[in-house]
Length: 93
Image (tube, rainbow, N blue to C red; front, side, top):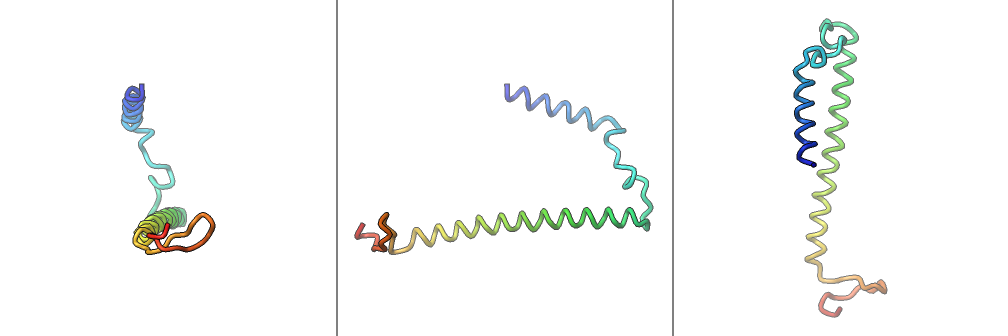
């Protein structure tokens, strides 16, 4: 059933892309004059959205790489914390 849904979505998506009126850009972008204020505002808005997405994506990558590094340091550490909150050497547990 899941495979059927995937094919259905693919066929419907491809069909919608083949309809020229749906595939056209919005009137602001399609017929915009390069020096108009609307086109300049749209360019800045797209740049802001792309920059925000890039910063968030970079933060996520940095977070997980930092967690991987900390996990490696934790595995190599010589001491552990017991359930009572005491810090002991790994061989003493």
